[in-house]
Each structure stands twice: as C-alpha cells, then as structure tokens.
Image 1 (cartoon, rainbow, N blue to C red):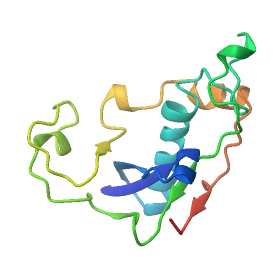
Image 2: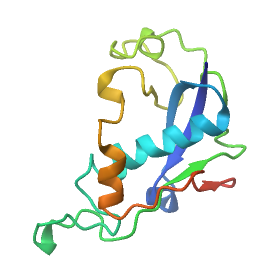
Image 3: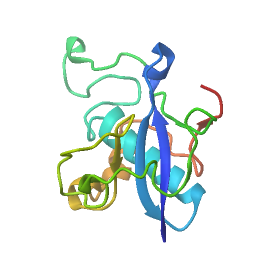
Image 4: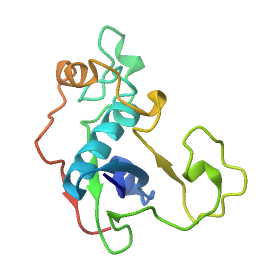
Amino acid sequence: MQPYTINVSGSERHDGEKPYTYVLNTESLPEAKAAAWLYHLWFAQSEQGLVAFDGTIPNQPNWWDAHARNADVVVIDCPEFPCHPGIPSQCTDRCHRDAIVEPTSCRCPFAWHWIYRTPQTCLPVGAIDRLKELGYDLPTSPPEETTW
C-alpha cells in the first residue's frame, strides 16, 4: 500500500470553496478515490449518519433540516487540485506523518488530513448500511469532476 492524495468537495464548491484534501494508504488511485469519497459522505455530508440524502433530519421537525438539498459530493481531480500518489507537500510537521499529533508548525498552503489511520478517522461499523437507509446512492465508482 502507498499514500494517495485525494480531493473531495460537496455543494460548497459551487460557491468557490476549495475541496477537502485527504491522504490515505490504499492499493490504487481508484480505491483511494472511492474510500475518500465515502469518508467525506459519512463525516461531512451525512454528519455521521444524521442527515438524509435530501438534507432532512429523520424524525425531527422540518426546521431542523440541515442542508435542505440533495447530497452533492464529488471527487475533484483537476489541474488545480490533482489526485495523485504520495502526500501533497513536503511539510515537516509531525501531524502529517502521525495522525494523532496536532499541527504545530505546519506551513502547508492548504489543509490536508490523514484518514483511515486511527479509529477516529475510520468509518464506524454499520456506516454504509446507515447511509443506504438515509437514501444515499453508493455507486461502485464515486462521481468525479475534472474541472474547477
């Protein structure tokens, strides 16, 4: 296995917000893209299994609705934000080598995070089933955009 850098974004990209950048160890780039997309879907979009595909919060009044729009999460692989083998920079801060260390002297031009390295950065048991219950479509390959 080797590290891969993967960029994932939700609907915030339509407002010009940069994608989230994740680094994870996998066997291949397609496997890394799928894993990072699923990670973002669980932790950011569904807020760890609370928010349904349509932006509603099941069993709560409508005024609790979190997003009020359908999930829109894609892998971003473009010249400005390329997905690639390796880590995104040669930053020497230990936070990029050791997932349990907080950043201390990071000078990276953008934030990036290791995922699937500690229990806190892994999907919990049952996450995929919960996403399906909430109406999320989980394709074999994640949706991808090649322009920014």
